[in-house]
Length: 193
Image 1 (tube, rainbow, N blue to C red):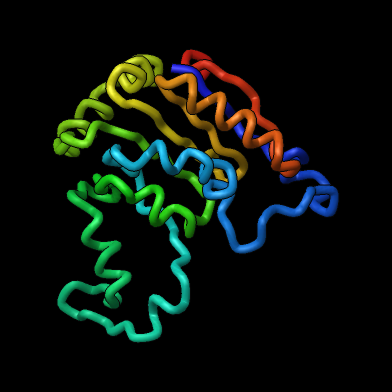
Image 2: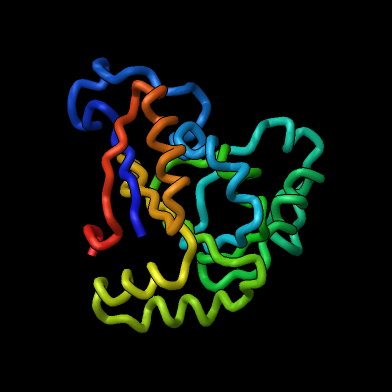
């Protein structure tokens, strides 16, 4: 499994005025990976932790609070809730389309996202296997054989993307050349080990 790391051209701890402006009101995830959305529609998604999503205000105009479920409700929010198949702790399994529909509203911060086949349904088994590995190297080798592709956000500073499909990497490399705020650095999954 090979990948790319997407770094801002200027590290976050340096003079921020030197950064080429990023797209306002759009997550780095959406800016970088939108070009792949048409390729991602058939996968189910394992999201490692509840992402912070900043949905459009109009989704809340006619919303009401459901005390029994402890959630805000509206047609758009109900559609979002129905895209989640299963949850275990703060991890969840989502329907195909989740990434392309909702991660455009993502706040970029610590997050792992894994693509699994459309028939996948055993979130609990996946998480048990994941955490049963005592060594990170063994866990990552298992991941490389188990998932089709994955996204990692490291502390809101940068995204990494790994795929078993070389064409995904080629498309992203070409796309990022057109985004001056980022540079793509090639990596193999083994480098993560």
